[in-house]
Image (cartoon, rainbow, N blue to C red; front, side):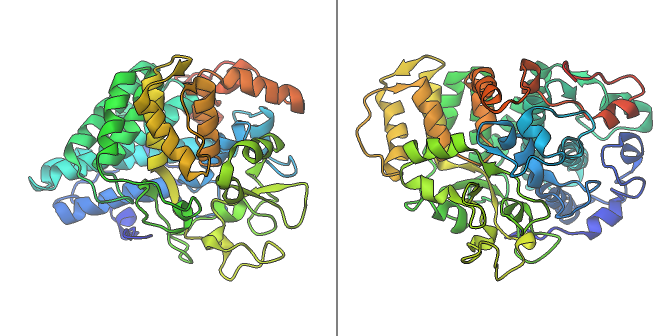
Length: 473
């Protein structure tokens, strides 16, 4: 991983997997003690690195391994109108057709992965007393950023979820299964990000920073309808010197560019630090038959609204002209040659970083904050941020007003296939309308209850009756 080398011996020292392979079996896992480790800055630093390792996930074919962000596109992008499977096969096809079952292994894996990050963050927070006065607030900021990031994803995808703020003992295992109201979860998310923003500085993009905490907190406040708070945070980030990358394609292949605020980083060719989602988006390269393929609706939309972003967002599958592939994450930047699958390096061991937060997103959030839930704005500051994003896309006609739909469309064009579309539809109050229309057009089975994922059945079984299922499942 760029700038971060995840230290595998840490896992052995504190025994993350000494009892069970499933990191969401909280009873044996919580019983593991970190006493005797985490005694100084160097040791706590390895714990912080392990948090990022959990976010990164394991490049593996085994769904018992926590895959982290490497499977996030299933539960986000493929449940929107942006992507689908190529052949409508297997568990993956459940996402596009809204036929997800509580036993879906991908859902269970993503849920486990989020709690793996939370568990590791809680371990660091539990041991801050052993850190130096200088490093303690930094470690706290990084751990709380990661915990908030994970809970923000969980609460948007699953609704009420267990809220675990510290390592728990076997006698407290009920905490790991008791679902807590979303408002309470959001209280922790906001508090954690406020602490992270106060404690951290800027300069990193593969680790949490002040800008990353403020940008993520702005998105949280937009989700909660706290528009003035979101506007102030966006304007803070806008004052830190970030810029739009002149060439849209370079955002994803010129790693470390000045548009990036926070990424989950990977290294090419190293199994422990590489990713395979880039290969999965291709055909005959990854371990599936083609997932996260671009819908006809998304392709038509980009053709009409993407400007110069379109060619760097999707392409025609070289093998099947009726299919379209995401190209923001071509394995290691290679196009696969004329046949589309002749990569010089192993596509399943790719080093592309996953972009979580970038400056264009902040500019569009700034516009959204000023719009403040209204149908239209002529505010010059909102227009200025909106116009900057469009200018980079070659869409330079002057904008004099912005409607809510135009902003939602611009976010779709700018952030296509970056796992933002479903969350945007939910936040703008358009998810049910858009996904109902998509379902009708494709003979899917979408209903309002599909806006949330099912709680994994395995968690319900382990809870001995404590955990309840979401409606509709």
